[in-house]
Image (cartoon, rainbow, N blue to C red; front, side):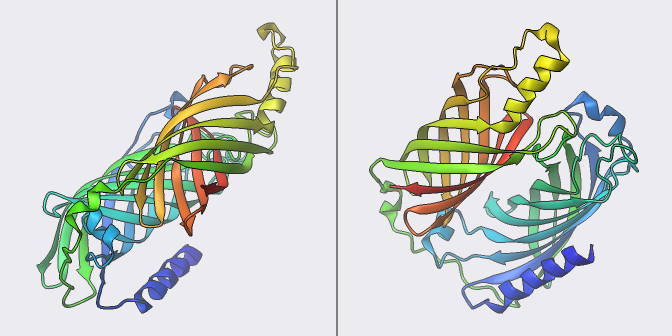
Length: 365
């Protein structure tokens, strides 16, 4: 926990040091409590009590000095630290560190926060000491949280209030089995504290024709890789490689639509096919089935400054071995380095069943 707190406050210091009059910042502290959502009957024995915890965040407010800030209604961005007691000795407790955005609606009274980061769990699966924990197969996991809150700043001097719903997801995306994951749906209530006595004025300089932005088709090539494991515990971690090619078309400054093709080389699936052929001979699996897959997909990309959020829905057109269904989903983010090159961090899944966390490098021509 000391390590996470040190990282959290170091980030705050580094961001705060770079502050100028175009921005202001604030803290918020939220208590939350609720329930674990039953998304898989394999975790039924793990749902006990009502998990609770605390989220501490530092937020940098934007005021439209850059055009993207005005396009997204002056969002905040920052870092969050979360502690959650899952009220189960098998699951233990989780500590998480996130980067997040806050988006505002209804005259800035409604806030939607989306955060992505890493979590540390105190009691992961162990075949002898903790074999009942089928949710967390590793100590380090990815975590996503969303917060939908009614919010009022500066209710009393620099203090404000917020409250609403929070959703927290933990998963290692099959980097190591087991991995049924845990989702918590909670109520939260918190206070905010503004670090600046006076905030800058909101800028409204965006040109009326800003929404008329057009761009020709762009062509993208992405190489993705990582490691993962099948659901068979201790079956081993194997590398995978994915080559993606797609075309995208910007429909405005915020959004682009995508059409593309994926080629999957998943070595864990190659070993899984061999395992099924030996362990379950009645299934009719020979062990020589091709482990490679080819999919086509359509997607959407939301551009937020140099970071963009992507969501893609795919269908395997070459599918020699039936594994988790013929449709797949990819969600995640991209970070552009200049006008052409980008890095990507994405999650590929079949419905609610994660297959892999993908680290990608691509070029947009």
